Image (cartoon, one colour):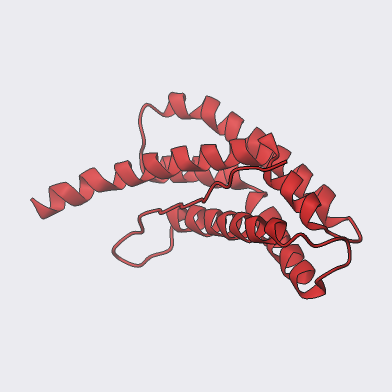
Length: 161
């Protein structure tokens, strides 16, 4: 079954003063998830059977572990970023954060299931890539990326003007 590839590009805007903030934490988390997803697309295309390509298998396991770590607490990091950016109305963000948390937990469950397998084939990764849970998570990340970028942009425009 041929599946279409989705390339993820999350581009959070960072603070100019260089201080690490929750936006940086969100950026780091999303980068880990993005890097893992992009590698999984390439891994799935390799057509590796279970146990083949141990170097690739080791890499995919490492990236899955990083993505799992990034998923743990993702919604809380997003909530704190919303607060840091003073996004309003705050009560509109809470239902979305519940969805993001569910997407992250569902994706984490699928990733952890794959990680405990003794061998990770390209087909297994292809099925993980196609998971509606992972795709829902990526779509949610696209949404918050745009919201966070637009929240920073007006402040920068005012300062420049």
